[in-house]
Length: 120
Image (cartoon, rainbow, N blue to C red; front, top):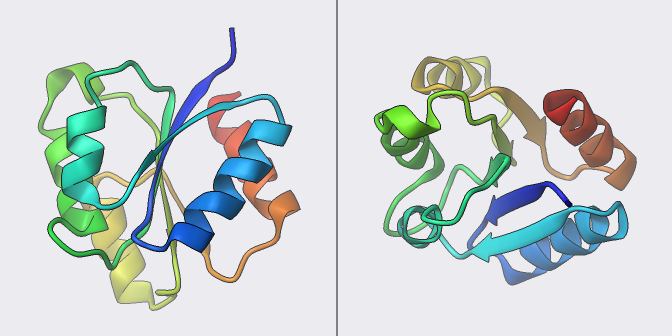
């Protein structure tokens, strides 16, 4: 059975590219438009969350904190996929519980390498 990845980004073009890349590699992808939408879709079991940082309604850091507050999601890997590259933002993400960080723009090979490393 394919591993399920929840991708969260307010940019439709980024969601489309991530979904295409992951689907071509054999993953099943669920899309969410922001953190609030992602929380609503986390009722289905997922193996990985890839989230943007800057989004309306609930940003990536807030989403990670909400996911980590749920004991059932304690070990769920979460990757930040964002234009933010400052060390302070990365530390904030790590403190919230992010597993990894990819800076946009990114290559599809880079995305797949990180996903494979995180999912084993």
